[in-house]
Length: 71
Image (cartoon, rainbow, N blue to C red; front, side):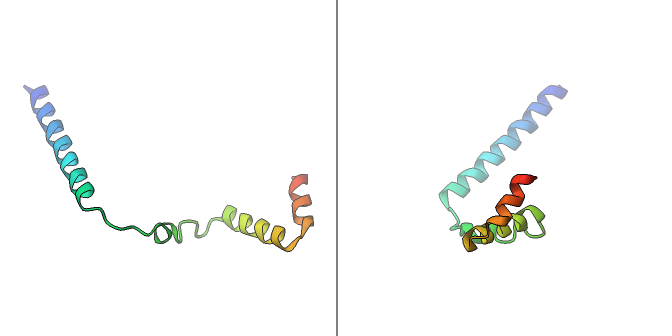
């Protein structure tokens, strides 16, 4: 009987999840993708490095690119 109880509990969880998904589909919340990702790279050194490379490229500073090739 333990397996039946476990199966019943699992089915109840699946049904609850399906119900929640159906509610989300029926009433989609408008999302602003920019607000969702804003701050997601905060305190990420690699992102700061990417920004520096982009800035150097836009300003025509090829020494930054040459230094990267040496690494």
